[in-house]
Image (cartoon, rainbow, N blue to C red; front, side, top):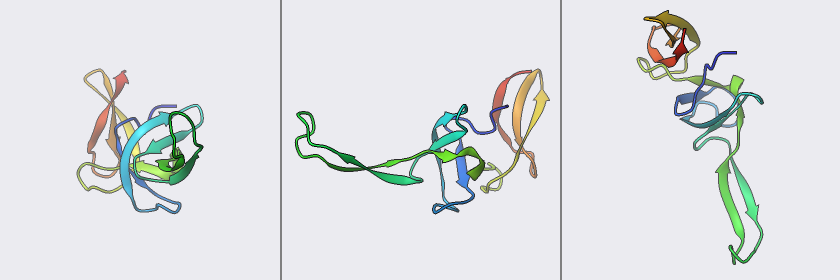
Length: 109
């Protein structure tokens, strides 16, 4: 399946406890259909004491979300949008459905 969401995209969270928030995509895991979004779906990681980490403690870090729960943000409106693919000048591009705003190149057609 084509990459509707890519690394470094700004995405809008559609559902879940962080619904309505936006963030930058840090990583995409296409085989598991997950995305890692900066500042969204934060969980606490408990760290044991060790020689490296003398005190131990808790660290807050983002956990992956399902891809179906996020949408790329349209550069023209600043809101979440659906994505379609268009071939222009021999390049396959991602385009916002409603406004036609360019979301970037996917690859060669």
